[in-house]
Length: 313
Image (cartoon, rainbow, N blue to C red; front, side, top):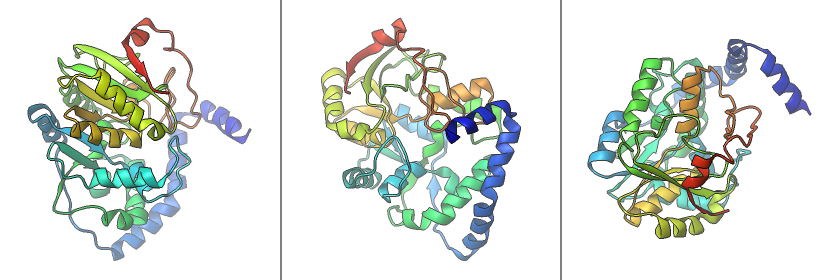
């Protein structure tokens, strides 16, 4: 009941007022982090620029697994009240993926922890808090001599101030699937590309539909579907939370090229709307929105339905 009331109040308030409220809520943790972090020493990490990451994906057929702060929380077994339950098996396989030596697999970590200077205020505050509270625990799983990609490569809008940067970033990412046959592996409420032109430059799109929650429990069956239906010359785009991070590594070992594409579709919809906040998108599940409402807008869409080649639910 309280959640519904809060949601109705938020709907009535201007976005900038809500954004200011979010900033104010972060201030105590941010000030504490700013003070405490001065006493900590962190190693330097090299983050591969996003354009070079895309070039590696295109020119050298690399795959990409991404570890945002959420994936590290699953590794650390910290409760997130999320769409994927914690489990020792999930944590172990995430860790194995993070430390993989597969030469065809790129690993992304949160670039905002290393450098958040291009981010807007809320994101800068968030990353400083994460760095102060969690980075010491995360560090033991990372190799400072390894060159990582930026896990936020697929999130070029909501945390940034510069719309030109966002547009250029989306254009850069679109090069990955340009004139490619694509198989999307996604949650049943994700519906990548529906309602926008994000993937209009592909040759074709097919979909393997997976559970919206606790998809990791079905990962073996999902991999069986990939083995059965996907050709080695097709590009796999996975949007399935931490399961996608692992799925990409498994697919890479099987000889496929796969990209953990994450929230890119939602980021693109937010970019098109110009929103300041993480809002719900009609017909798509947005786990970061306050209401988490998902309508059935695209459920009977002929383009969407005809693209589905398998369901693993």
